[in-house]
Structures are given as C-alpha cells and as structure tokens.
Image (tube, rainbow, N blue to C red):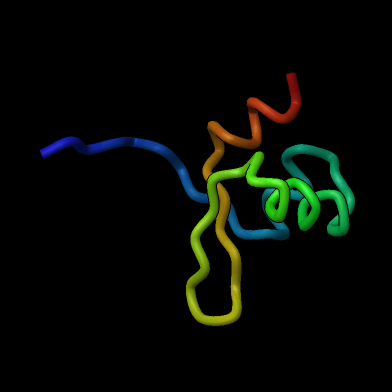
Length: 55
C-alpha cells in the first residue's frame, strides 16, 4: 500500500501559503491544476500541487 506524507491545506491556508486570491485558487481547481479533496463544504489542497503552481 502506497502512503504519502503530503500535507493538506484548507482553502484559507492555501491562499496565505501561495499568496493567491480565492478566485485564483478556484480557477486553478476548475482547470485541474490543483489536487484537491472536498470534505463537506470545504476544499482542501495538497501542498505539493500548490508548490507546482508557484513555480
């Protein structure tokens, strides 16, 4: 079984970490550029996918 130590960030944490606006985060999510997971009404993003966007 493959395990990953990838850290998940909430939307607010991702915005602060990547210095993005919330609408930019949403657009990246819709375009498939971010790996995300929806838990209830909240979105969580992998730190690795946000690092890829920042490059």
